[in-house]
Image (tube, rainbow, N blue to C red; front, side, top):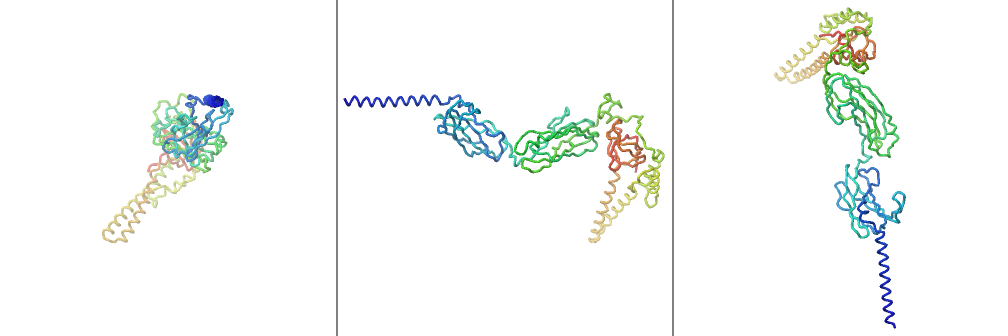
Length: 466
């Protein structure tokens, strides 16, 4: 009787163990994620931007798997990437992750990047419920740490035919170069200025509102380029130019002020194609007359201060003053007297060719004497005269440089802001005024009298020859 009872108890225990095993396995396989689901997983960035020299995290959510059933190991990493640590925790259902599970695992891994660039971390080994998987990372772009990044200026050309990334550009004189200046990696614009180029027309077309940069603040990193201003630049004379410099003072994410300038871009300006028409077909063209010959019937307002005869007399006196020896000539006094009669403010003494010749002869004599003294071994005297020669030669060069400047007497009228007959009139300049000639654009000359600059027709000037 005892033997059948013992066998029954033994059979019952085996049946109970089998039942519990079946139930456990059924529950396990029912909740274990599928192969397709695991293969679809990717480690994702936990932050919007990834920076150098800072801990960057990547996360992986696995549904229906408890943390104790997940093991992870890191494989070889790319150069410049180092593994910091990892963490596993329970993943609770929420609206963000769908909430269609009872529990899961939230796996976080931290890495550090030493260089900027695009990285793809090699897949890591993950064991889920005893099954081995390799789960990859999404590609990440690493930026310079905002603590060390400097704001940048860039330029985009809006003129058709100008390439965006060229460092040297060829254009015809008179071409409008429209460009926009952008700033990047800045949290505030402090100041904004530019250099006005010579022999050009330079206009600020649009200045953009930079409040979007200021409102972004130092805590919100952005790679967006913000427009600062748009300019219209028209080089009028052929030659080699650089893109007009625009300067922006901006604050970086670190709080440091930086004075920024545009990258250097060279322009080779070629002479404009000649035209048979003095008046363009499009009457509203902003600079259509830039290279046209001034009309013969120009009606520019001339001052009544002096007649053309007085200007010719004044021109003759200027030539005498520049060529006759000052000690034996009264041209300077006569010229000043005539200018006062014409209502002009007489300038100072003019450069004299005779004095230039004397300076040159003196320099040659000093050099010759100093060489002779050195040959005769009179070192102190020769060295002293050699020093005097150097000073004399420098004076000769400085004085002679003034002769390279071209000057003329103006017939009288108003300077124009651009070489166009219909351009807005500038400051009136009296007849007989001495002006400096800066450059030429067709039949127009850019001149200045003191701080007053402007364009005048070539026929309105009396050139002073030496």
